[in-house]
Length: 101
Ligand SMILES: [Zn+2]
Image (cartoon, rainbow, N blue to C red; front, side, top):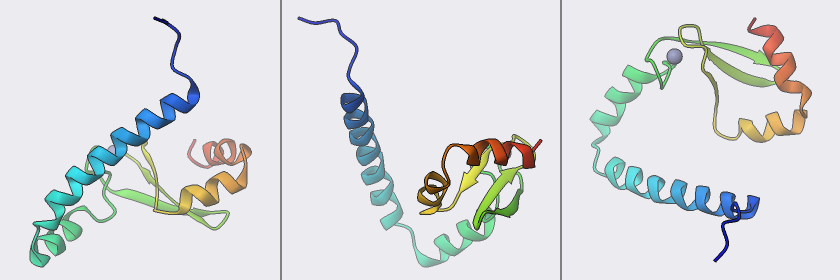
C-alpha cells in the first residue's frame, strides 16, 4: 500500500465528483421551487455578496464585469467570465489587485 499524495489528476477527479454530487443535490432542491419563490429569492439576493449578504460593487475591467463585496472583499465573476479571465493571463489578477487596493 502506498502513502503517496494523490496526483493532480486525482485531486481534480475527486473535486469534480464532489462538485457533481453537490450540483445534483442543489438542482433537486431548486426544481421544487415555485416561480414566485424564485422571483422573491432573486430580488432578495441580486447583487448581494453570497458570503456576507452585503451589496456588491460592479466594475468592468478588460471587458469583464467584476463584482466586489465592499464589506468582506470577496470577488465574484458571472458564469462564463472565468474563461475570459484565464484568457487574460496571470497578470490579470495583479492588475485587478491594483483596482481594489
Ligand atoms: Zn461579502
